[in-house]
Amino acid sequence: GDEITIWDNLGDPIVGEDNQVSPGALPGQIWDLEGMFYDVYAGHRGVLSMVGGFDFENGVYYQPQDRWYLPGDLFIDIDGDAVYGADVAGSGVGEPAIANTFGWDYAIRFFTHEVNGSPGFELYRLNEETLLDRATDIPGANPWRVNDEYAEAVWSGAFDYQTVPDNDIPFLDGSWLVNGEGWHNVVQIDLGFLFDYDPLVGLDHITFHYTYECGNDLLMGRYIVPEPSSMVLLGLGLAGFATFRMRKKSA
Image (cartoon, rainbow, N blue to C red; front, side, top):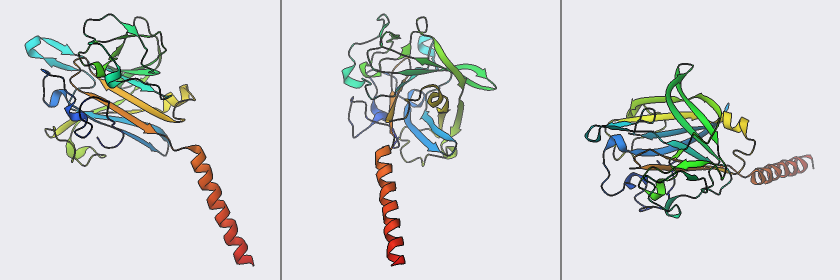
């Protein structure tokens, strides 16, 4: 994705996220995560979209192992201190839960049960003592999931989820879907509730991190908010220009 998807410090930054697959992992569309998109428009302070072949809602059943690989949590950092990529050490698989020393402030968990007719989610507020389960073999994909035995959800709501042909995804031109097979899963969630819950959200920038249980692939995205000071200076400049024009005309 070329909107807010960023390099996570693993692999080749030129090749990009589509090749963030661990050795021996299963390739293919059903394991693939493609891109993140963040839109701010009238009536919406931020709509996050995630696109990929992986089933964000239900996970993927892998028949040879007779098991489901579950969706992960969407981790959110609002103050710029998130740690990810090569700086996150350890294999993770089978390790006990560890404290959130990675700087993530919130996590959103998607559920298969419905809320008002749509798939539901719960928002967890995190701190440095929140326990996280590291259940993937890729260091850069940790943390993977909030340990909900020790974390309390502070918000719940609904999100939009569709499996659609590539040509029907309005914000894509299809040019970067190199691993596509004609269809993709799309999650869209309006984060307006998060802005209401925490006034610090969106003041500077907001960083997102998503991976699923198997950890074959991951997504990172960052949206940088335009600096208020720059906007003020621009406004003052335009005001001064208008005043100069008015004085020149009156003279």
